[in-house]
Image 1: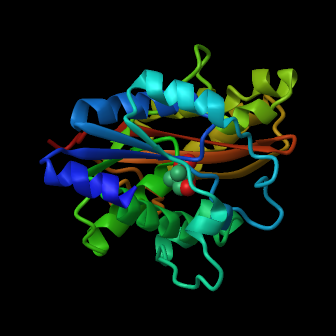
Image 2: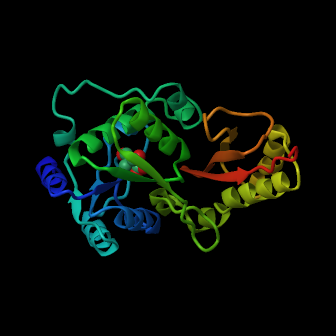
Image 3: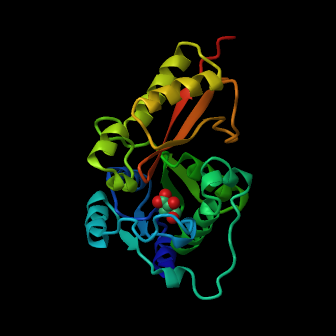
Length: 278
Ligand code: PAF
């Protein structure tokens, strides 16, 4: 892979990488299409990265179908697939990691304490292996996208980080490889996440600025669809990823994590806030 990337670079070609854990859905395909628009060579990586899963998480049952992924990625415009074995990525004795910093410890990091260290470490490795000029990630994993952009800046990777919009089903459910875990009934109720976000957006547009009030409204909307648990509803400054109590221009990112049965879903929405002072 490194030799292939070196060759492409020597020929003056621009490389875009789309890092994935496979089981490609329309959301991934939109990232590949975005990469296609931005580069001469599109590399898709498919690697279910063990180091970003906690000991009780779904690593073993995470859906995998390489042959289907290969066909889908090729059809969407990939020039190369990088599909390593875990032993190649993490040879015996590997010990160096990339610490995601304080933002790696909030929200998803509270519930999954080693997750973002696993993500930043594997993405750093994938950047060094695929040598891209730009890399495309999805906004669905907002905290991940923030941390990777921060890592690329802090560690001078020289890789442009592009974050592409969330792709949704017709009823609004954000696409995720984990949606396959939902029972038919849970799948119907799972639209509660996007409905709660839409409701908050409506209230913000009508002038509501209190995160607490919006959280109460969103919790009530979620409860209507009887989730197993609401892990968090967070109001975030998109620039710093810090939580905020009072919404201010130019925008807020509302992120939430909700469980239906054993399936944990995340979603988010950026809402622009009008500057009423002028
Ligand atoms: O978003 C994902 O699928 C993964 O976290 C990533 C970025 C491919 C790293 O394993």
